Image 1 (cartoon, rainbow, N blue to C red):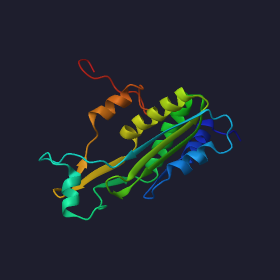
Image 2 (tube, rainbow, N blue to C red; image 1 turned 45 degrees about the vertical axis):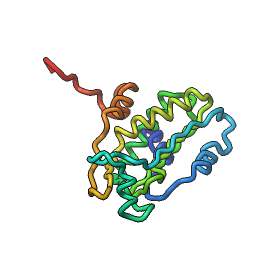
Image 3 (cartoon, rainbow, N blue to C red; image 1 turned 120 degrees about the vertical axis):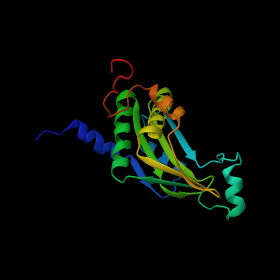
Image 4 (cartoon, one colour; image 1 turned 90 degrees about the vertical axis):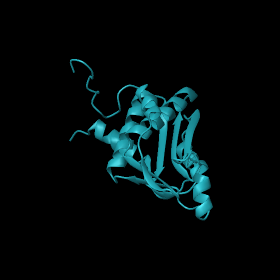
Length: 193
């Protein structure tokens, strides 16, 4: 029986993905990514954290949330579609490895559930033979993760909760890489389409 290289690549990428409520330790994750691989010349990482945002009246959510609740209370909640989310991220990893051949290892961790200001949300770490591809691959993965992975974000404040739509700037950042990995090309728009 013949092995399916695409299925094998996706299974290997799935092993690089963790989605759940548990926090992560950047140092431990980078150490695991580098462990025993003497071909690694660079590691690039990105850690996203929960930050303040403006409420409808212009006040910062943190001031409102901390003024009426205990510090450390959730101000964001992330939901995902189990199984689909991990597979979507793994597809992005396969695309990154194809685009940046010196990539040696990848780790993507995304938290879900309630999160407080300052909490870590996401880690993208890439080891590569060369720094340029480590940086580019990390940025490629983060740009597509923000727009293609099935996560839903709800911001919580004294005003209540509201689901957050994708930002145009995130779509523009991802668009510079070409079409979405694992997705068909976009249909033409405008006259005659």
